[in-house]
Amino acid sequence: MLEFDGLHITLPLKGEHRTVVHRVDLAVPAGSAVALVGESGSGKSLTARSVLRLLPPAARVGGDVRFAGASIPAMDRAALRTLRSRDVGMVFQDPRAHVNPLRTIGDFLTEGLVATRGTSRRDAEAKAVALLREVGVADAARRLRARPAELSGGLLQRVMIAAALLAEPRLLLADEPTTALDVTTQAEVMAVIDEARAQRGLALLFITHDLALAAAVCDRVAVMYAGSTVEELPASGLHGDAHHPYTRALLASRPDAGADDEPLRAVPGRPLS
Image 1 (tube, helix red, strand yellow):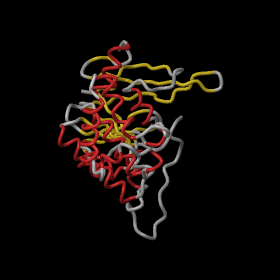
Image 2 (cartoon, helix red, strand yellow):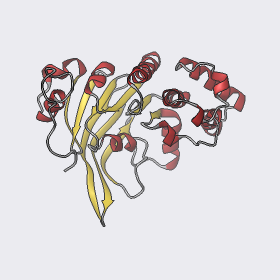
Image 3 (cartoon, one colour):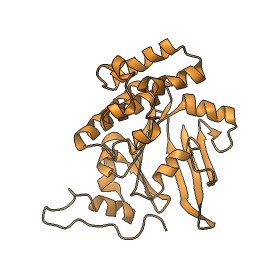
Image 4 (tube, one colour):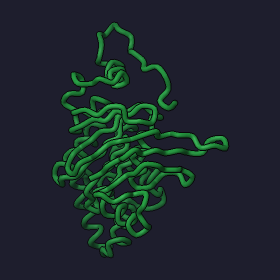
């Protein structure tokens, strides 16, 4: 369903373009869950954003990203609009950065359906309420009248999941969706995403720095370092089948990887060369 074929991204820095994603080769088959794992700065989020062409305007993209066989970089405006409004949903890392603080949750959830599907406001609100309930938002009808500042981080992230599912997409992108949340809320949010994916048969590309979380949620794990995918393996064989030195270093650096009296192992070097 989703394929990255030699994806290469450069961004302007101090008068010249710097390579921030060197090479990503990865496939996310229909109905599967694939994690893209790496430390901050390795290029994971840029890779995910390239699927919806949400990169900075000055970015230069090489290679190809395909959805259902169609090249995303080559899409015209109409095809890109369909991709964003129907085929792919995205849950971002910081929900507060992606909602208008002056508008209500109801406005945020329904405007896409009204604008792109011709759905009536009443029907869009009914669908939004049903989805909010599905993702665990209590008193969903009342929440439509609330503004983002009135919701906790965990509750707002559930709203973002509902927003991503409203258009009934075939692919869900989840970019570090639990980073800003406490441990208990993290588990709840991931359970919501996992259940929604299973019920709908969605494909999932899950961006994270947490190997344990990736293994718990996904079928396969791809490891990214210095802007490139360096290894891909089944989630069930993450510990026994890892061969690349960076994957092994990531596994060894987890707090629960060694004895209690051992210092944590750091991964040397920088995420981007």
